[in-house]
Length: 113
Image 1 (spheres, rainbow, N blue to C red):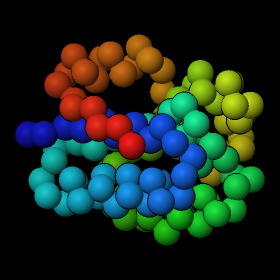
Image 2 (cartoon, rainbow, N blue to C red; image 1 turned 180 degrees about the vertical axis):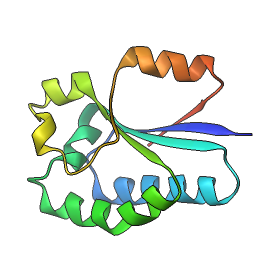
Image 3 (tube, rainbow, N blue to C red; image 1 turned 30 degrees about the horizontal axis):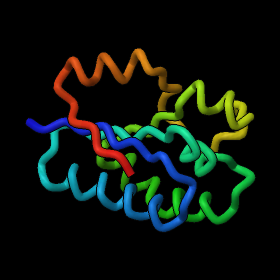
Image 4 (cartoon, rainbow, N blue to C red; image 1 turned 90 degrees about the vertical axis):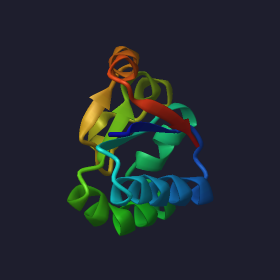
């Protein structure tokens, strides 16, 4: 079965919407596992203080939870963009680059937005 790690690298509303929709479509189409990692400037989309991004994430969050799509926040990016964990709107896990290597070793395909 297919397994995907989606990397959201931009803090752009349209890109965020596309990445979230795409992750749901992959899972509904039979993917075994889908994880979406907010990385680089994309980590800003998880910041509670950004209302526009919060509305988009909130709109999709119920579906993503029901589909067991995990939301990861990049630890180094949180530090780089000064977003502490308590300012994240939601996350299933704080993500490290070592974790990315483990997922690739387990056969996850990486898709970047």
